[in-house]
Image 1 (cartoon, rainbow, N blue to C red):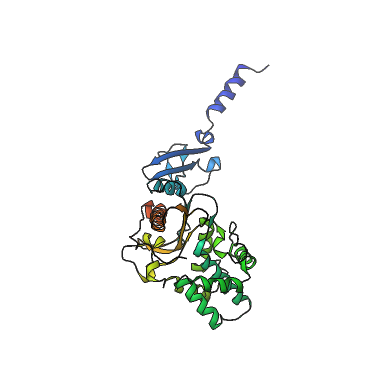
Image 2: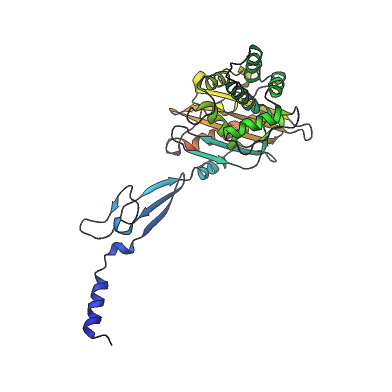
Length: 331
């Protein structure tokens, strides 16, 4: 039987255990006006916690909480921004954005959408990749088709290059190398019915605009981005609405797509590209369907582009400028 002295010693030892051994983790969730911010904390070194910034107890105390690191849910911020976007009844929209400088990204909406003419960027990227693999430059004919396809959204030129890259099979093979996971080429000659997601389009934009990790050479990227910066004047709408007011030239580089579906009479209106806002650059993709007019779809894509940039802007407060009106040429 244990003596009374032994019991007293054991109780004394328990009382001397440092308080910090009980502090294994701390998590505080704080809601801000801009969205949810998650504050994660860990105990001090005695508890094996990671340390990145301090929020310690007064000196001389045993207990300390040494990590307080904010993690902003950008998807939640974008969803909040999209709540103020007027989406027409029956229409659907999805958006994705990346700040390539910081790696911050956000996405909204799910599901695959018809590409319409935004697939022309993908066709050009696949063509450039094939030329690189063959260690050759584009031919004069290929360059002529590429200029007309991107700058003027010429469909005959797109069809010629669609055949050149091997149609859907060639597009899908290139996209596997580019890292697109949810994009599938259209059946037969129907390149405009390629299926994609907004998130996949941002992956493609990163291949075109960012050197790090790109399958495209610097010369190929410069060629593609140059064409996207010289879009015909009546097509300068869409994601460019998120660029700084009056931004031209380096302020944006884009490709739009618009298609009236014969089965429903409703419009597919999409826009992808790079925009400059608040001293930073963003890669933005917006895809939509179900608008009753092209102009209605353009308004929707521009509002979604502004919302996307605002969700990843500095302090989640970035924003865009104003875009031009809808183009009238079918694509």
